[in-house]
Image (tube, rainbow, N blue to C red; front, side, top):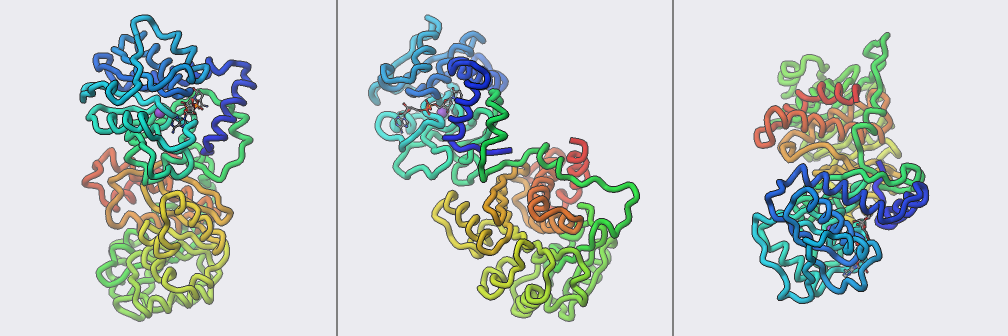
Length: 503
Ligand SMILES: NC(=O)C1=CN([C@@H]2O[C@H](COP(=O)(O)OP(=O)(O)OC[C@H]3O[C@@H](n4cnc5c(N)ncnc54)[C@H](O)[C@@H]3O)[C@@H](O)[C@H]2O)[C@H](O)CC1
Ligand SMILES: [K+]
């Protein structure tokens, strides 16, 4: 699904009015109704609701929400900041439509700020996608007041003060919402880790923005949904044999880190690969043969580290490398040999990323359009460099993928997948329980298996990340986030793939 910019959201808004021949008041009513529906499911009518409205249509939404919640017997108080003479037309109309029993309180100075209590439920309707400068002055004082209270804050569309799709200047105040309920599509800002404290838990409610407009609009930014991903899943053929599903090679493991190889191998096998060969340091032989009997195991000449490659590397469909391998010189030499002699697609993780990051020569040897990197933020920094903020990091990632014609999956709460053309997909599965050792090794195994089966690199990257997170979400229901370990993900891959096939 597409992520629209603030400008495109406004255009979608206008297109919807035109196609549906409705006026903007009706769309505002729809948006507020969708928000109020969400709110009623979350908060009981007994709790006093304080709604803070700004001068634009976000404030207008707040006024409609006040009317709708009042009808549902919520105890609503409305606060309007500044001069309502300069408010947007739809804001003004909905101010008139408030029931007589709701008398808005005007905030003209800091002394007008109401005391707040943790039993209050706050709705932030100050600014939405129309924010066009950092929030300062009285608005900023109000935002500080809200942030310093212990009341629960729900933002309409955007946490006020946060730019929708660009870096917010440092001098602007931003609401720290517990929940953000946004209209139709999530905003780019929601996917960036630096905004977690402002956006809180985000939800999207549909308001019927024109599907035709959304289908036509061009963007580089996408988020993945179960429908997008299930369409990409390749059904198994009836007259199947293992030769149809590729032969993967995993170069993984080191002395004391053979578990990484086991995790990657099991995940690879649970993701549909036809055949799997492991190449591990020789001390890993009994471990792999015992722990993963389905995989074939080749041993390196070195006992502790990978120092070379198997013969006939070209017979494999894909190589996954990195988990547990360390950064010894001999291992670096082996990777150099792989890059110099093979044109196979590669899934590169962990210390293989660190090794490549440390050498311009190796970077220059990366085969074009054949590499997926799966770094966590530290590995990303070594590979691509340090970025000033999350937006710059997206630009830096696009630039790196363009220069080296590669794919990057930057792992995080919303893993970002970048293509050589600069397309960015944000993943929507996964949870904090997955922040534990070995889950990255599982991802390497999953993605390697998908490439082996003939998924394009773009498909393997977005499907792999999605199914890995979905396995984590399914595991969450059984073991919770605190006790979750990487093997729980592998154990839930079958259920995750089944969910995608039947979606
Ligand atoms: N398509 C949709 O999703 C719909 C969205 N709706 C809601 O409308 C807002 C956007 O409304 P808009 O009037 O364009 O902008 P805002 O309310 O966010 O604010 C504009 C208002 O505020 C002034 N302003 C901007 N920045 C600042 C600042 N830093 N300090 C002070 N004042 C500022 C600006 O000059 C304007 O006066 C969207 O988020 C939704 O909530 C519709 O209701 C339904 C369709
Ligand atoms: K808001």
